Length: 304
Length: 248
Image 1 (spheres, rainbow over the protein chains, first blue to last red):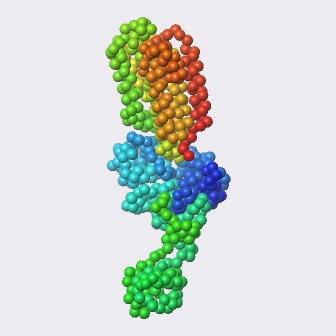
Image 2 (cartoon, one colour):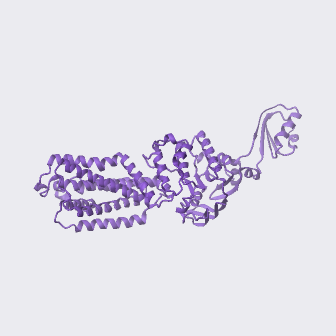
Image 3 (cartoon, rainbow over the protein chains, first blue to last red):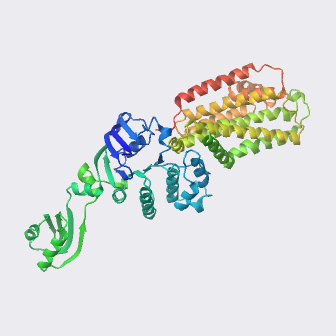
């Protein structure tokens, strides 16, 4: 266990931003917090990073108390903050060089610049870098300390899909190097793809914490199979094993059900009945569906 | 200490790359000295209290540089770093947070010192500057002036609710000080009423002290020293109790 959080509470004035959350982070995992804006993700991550004082509860990170032992802690972790910018007119290599001087065991930044494909930009002003390049620089600066845990707060927000996907591979690479990655994101898809475990946050509380697969399975949300075809015997279809409900809307049929054999059973049935079917698709539940089910309100990432 | 040194080094580079600061700290005072020196020369003149014009103007322009670095660059850089969360990023490293402020103070100190040296070199080479008649007392006056005005700058950075407000406050403080303190317009050419108004401007005491120590005048420095020490103490006290690393 590298991080231990117990009953963490943090208020801003009369607003309770984080409301008594507890969880552990294991060594070498990628753990993500997802949730809408204002759910308390950034406050949580900043408390763990030692940037904010807790109102109550305890946090241990690598057996240190973050807020009190910040100087020791920052030798061991790496941090990327949401919405950081860097000085105007500073060059990429200059800020890397500066950060290297902060740490006892800093990694050679030239290697990091090469690895993150910024070496040919090392003499560029940071302000002239693209969004994706700036975020790669943020990772480099977080990695210079050769951290055991790296914290990424909404690293991919505002990046185009291509840059985001290449960022995902870089983050997986960090884990493969044996580092623990703690990230926040408001992209459910990102959490599902990247994280070994996901904590779903809403209104300052963790509503669920598990692997994406377990979250989806334990949510009890049905799979859907949708196709167009002339099904007259809806009751017959309903009697198949694993099927919970069938809805028919003119020629479009939606089958709700569970189980690994569901698709095969449905296809076998309609073929046996000699029904012509077109546009068959399956909709597997995702974390967004889980969020809706757990919180009772729809997850709208566009609003973020 | 290595971190503080590297931070100061890179921040100094950034200051040199900032055209406005470099121009008003290095080029503009020298241009003014060349212009007014060219007009009045540096022969002893009863109009300038028996001193040469360049001898009188040079310490005033040092006051002007202290205002640029201490009232503009220092508070505006800190306010900007806070607003853009650059301070916060430094907070998430093992360095001591006050290093960031210390490095800014050192950078602006060195910038001011270079401005002074440029003025002295140009004054000596172009005009027959009579300088350092009372060397040690001028150095002490220079240090006190810097610390006093810089702490006033830190006060601006501390009380401003955001970077725009810091810019507004700095401008409101800086421009009247520049014209009323004798830093740009010598007291000798000011109407009597303006000389009176100038007494409420802190920079006036900087210019007065620098001038008198530079020229080795027999006058008492006590009032200047008292005013500047008071500004120093009050500003540091308020800054220390109001300074925030991050806007909420």
